[in-house]
Length: 224
Image (cartoon, rainbow, N blue to C red; front, side):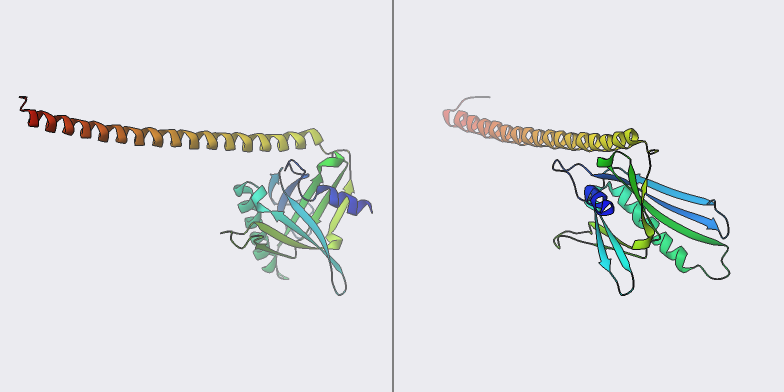
């Protein structure tokens, strides 16, 4: 019951469109038999929109995690997909003679529990991208399938919740600042365009007025 409650607490977004969890992706490479990685790659995203769902299988249960790319920085989405594809290529290349083996895991921290719990989902089995709206030009969801036995809930008091909240707030502030600067840039461009059109119109009117004055003077026989 606690597992399901915590999962629900971090899925989707709050009413004000703020995230309900933070998460990180780690890809590591180990020498077979060693407990310390020889290579480590990681990326943290503090503003994901995720959904968890259980999928019953013939002899086991799977958990599908949907990560909504449109709520992530584009660079985050690119890194996550690269990690997944690299991991897939590396795991498929493992043979009996291999000296190293890759591992990959996702850590999800539900914010409402203030760092008391976190999930670790390890060894993704399958992943794919999809669109929620067919009119979109690019996929906006990364779906990842895990064996339910590799998705584990941990309880701890060691997570720096204040740091997580700070990361989330910094991401939100940065996004708001970007949107404000984008709006200001658009408004400036609109004003410049309006001034340019006004200048063109005024120039045309001045030319027409000058032509009219010249014509009028010519008819009246004025000298220039």
